[in-house]
Every structure is written in C-alpha cells, then in structure tokens.
Amino acid sequence: MLQLLMIILLFLLSLMSGCGNQTIIDDRHPTMTIEEKAPVQIEIWHTYSEEETRIFENELIPLFEKEYPEIDVKPVRQPYNEQLKSALISRASVNRKPDIIRMDITWVPKFAELQLLYPVSQFADFKKVKERFYEAPLASNLYDQKYYGLPLNTNTKAAIYNKELLKEVGLLTPPKTMDELIRVVKEHNLKIGMTHISSWGSLSYFYGLGGKLTDPSYTKASGFLDSKESIAAIKKLVELYQSSNLPPQIISGYPETWQSIRSGNYFMIDDGPWFYSVHSLEEIALLNEQAVSAPFPSNGGPSSILGGENIVITKGSKHPEAAWTFIKWMTTATPQKSLLHAGLLPTNKHVEVSTIIQQFPYYKSYIDSIDQTFLRPPVAEWDEIDEVYYHYIRLIFTQNISVEEGLKKAAIEIDRLLNAKKNVKNGEHNL
Image (tube, rainbow, N blue to C red; front, side, top):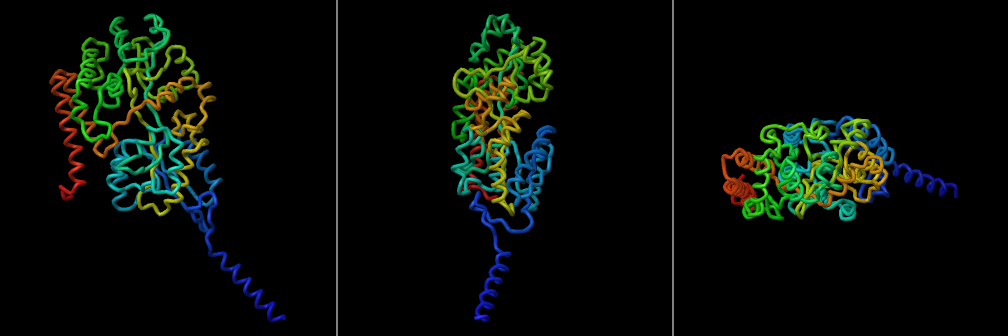
C-alpha cells in the first residue's frame, strides 16, 4: 500500500513540474499564447507631438501594460517628415523595423505595395473590430482588398469664419454651400484664406465645387480630373485668385491665416482641429469670441479632405498577436478619449464626445464632418500623383497654361502612373 502511495505521489509531482513549461491561453484573446516568463516586448514608432507623447507614453502605455502584463510596449518617438518614410523602408530592407508604426494615412498603400505590412484583416476577430470605426478613416487602410492597419486618429478641415464679418454681410449662420460662400465674398470684396494650391491646401475647395481627381475606384483620372465639372471648379478658383478674393501667397507660401482671421482681413479660412488645440485655454476663449467654425461648405457630395494617422503592424514582426492586441486596444474608448483632449479626433464612432464638445465646442464641426470627407487616392503612387496635380495647378494659376489643357495633361500623366501599376501586376514589366 505504501509503495502504491509513493508511485501516485511521484506521478503528481511530475505533472506539477511539467506545468512550469506550459503556455497559458489568454481568455481575453483566445488566439494568443503567452509564455510564463518575461513579458513579450513590442516596439512602436510614433510621431506624436509633445502633449500627445505625454499622454501616450506616461498614461496610456502604463494603463495597457497593467491590463496586459504579459506585453511590454517600447515607444520610440520619431520626427514627422518624409525622411521617416525613407528610414522605415530602409530598415525594413535589413529586417530592423519596429513591430508597430503610427503613420500618415497616405503612406499605407506604398508600404502595403512593398509588402512591408501585416494584413490585419487576416486576424479572426477583424470583422468584429472594424465595426467600431467611421467609414472613411477605416477605408484609408484598404489596399488591394485587404486591410493593412486600423485608423488610430482622424482629422479633416473645417471652415473658420470671422464673426464680425458674418454679421456685416447679414449672415446668421456660416455659408453651407460653395456657391453661397463665393457669392458673399465677391459681393462684399472679402478674402478666403486658402493656404496653398497644393492638394492639401486646395482639394477641399476643388471637391466642394464639384471637382474630382479620379474615378471612385481610383483607377483613372481621364474623364474626371478633366471633366467639365472639374474644369468649372478650377476656373472659379482661378477667378477668385485673379480678383484678389484669394491671397497671393497661395502660389509659393502660406498666408498668415491665424492672424488674418482674428483681425478680419479674411472672411474665412480652413484648418484642422490643431488650429485650436495648439493654443492655451485663454487664447481659445478669445478666438471663440472672434471666430466660429462650421463644416466645410459644399455644392453636394464630399466636403472636406480626410487626414489622420493609421496604426499598422510590420510584416516580419516576431509578435504579431501581441501587436494586434495593442493596436486594437488603442482604438477603444479610453485611449481615444484621452488623446481627444490633445486635439486628436477619435476614429471609434462609439466614443462619447458630448462632454468634450461642451468644453471645446469647436470640435463639433470636425466630428460632424468626418462622414462627409473624401480620401486622397489611396494608391501607392500618391506622392507622384500629388506632384503632378501641384505642377499643373501652379501652371494654371500663373497663367502659363489654360485650365482645359492643364487638367487634360495632368489626367494623362496620372493615368500613366496608375496604368504602370496595372501593367506590373499583370506581369508586363520585369522588376
């Protein structure tokens, strides 16, 4: 009997010692297995500002690590410029990229085409996760029928009007259409503070007047950029420029929009939510007395350009499941609301923003505009398309080419860029 008890005891001890080498299944994330040893470390490169970084690194990451002690997050702040894109591509070529990147929405297609990103639509719970987002920010992650990231924060432009000038022209509310805006500024010889003729500076006006860069599937520009609607839109903008209803600095530099809207030199300017968030509460209070924001005016259709950042997982990450856990968490209510205080609009449509809007009323114009935004073509060739657009718009505004000819040539060149991609995918080019 004693011998039998000894055998049973030895058997139980062997089971217990074996358990020390087993993995634990995380019930919150059944796809993830976490070793019972040091936490998994994931590295994220981000481009947050000073205040955003303070919230992200000192508040949000510790909160996440408390909830998920098996994951350690290493943040690395990077400068927000084109050199960062080149550095990331270069590091990826030698397999030294971070696990996660916060990147501009226009970068995603290029990184996806270079096969540097992990397609997050492959995760089993992606369909459920994507239901939380506004449509346009989510769509900025879609490339070749796969999603390569999650929308982390979004932004768009609102129209900001001088209150005193609104009263002087007899308007109780800001113009809702571009036609009304143009009629008012021409009748009263006012200025619209458009910042630049670049795509970011001018496309909201171009689209608001009925113009289009490409077809809805972003496969061709001919018939859209050179359509009669687009020609009419650019002609109206050129007319405003020639009659001094647009500032002369839009050709080569940025006009002083902040000072000019406060002084009344401009009737209206356009800007993102950072127009307010970069200032102190005292300055914001004063600005609210002098100006009022509203959704960007439009003659129908999308009314403002979409901006923002997505959060992506790099292909080759050693811990994609842990990275997926983190980027999902960053799009839940708590981190989204925390970063809203720093001026970053949430992409999660279920985030309760009423209390924030009560404190900062100007956010309402931006949040109300998110569903009315348009994407810059989410294609890998966007940088080249952007250069073509700027080149010909500049020639048009400086009267070196007619509107019709300029838009036609721009459409042909953009088609060539888009068709080159098709030809490569069809095997017509050997790379």
